[in-house]
Length: 295
Image (cartoon, rainbow, N blue to C red; front, side, top):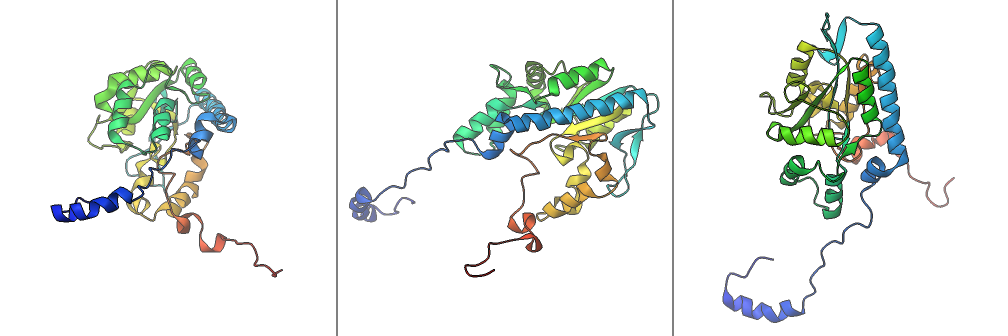
């Protein structure tokens, strides 16, 4: 309620205000949100992550032994309907990964998010980027620490391509190290938002990496970790949820999942958590129990 504009009204309303019942603030949830419980706490979430890393390592091992002509990074001018890939030539092998919830779990930040219930806050996230590497607040996605070490053992350079801020590069390097994921060098094996003029879009950074390396695998928890085309034009529209799902399943893109492109589970945040009832449950897929007396 706004303050009364005149003192007279304030004096008149004061006794009523004293008797009014003030609605209590919403009580914090007893448990973390379901997605956080799955990703950060469940055996099932750990198992599906380990499963993805096992598949990725098997795929990369085969690719190292049998070099193909092309990388798994889409070439400039390619489309999802007609993908073309950056040629490898004799460039050294690399695998490119998003960081947050792809190789590193931000458990400390998500605890703060769950306890406050405020949702994403840019200032809080910036503070987390700058300070969140300590006291065990970060850790590897299950399987990621061993997976990245195995990739390096195969002679594959591990490169991180994340939308963390370039202004916080040093802190991100420390966080990656603290999570048990090895060393990263900004501009060489770590690419960040602000490294080019494309903001959160990653295709420019992917192009820079693919110019130097034969990228034989990519991992991420959002479609944009594989191509900005998933977030462009009609696929970026307000009602694009069904279209984005179709785009992931159309040939030949559908054949890339598990064959160069590897998705890690993230039911906590991001582009996968969009859509209303009409987007998720189209009319021809709905059911309700029969009315009483109906057979």
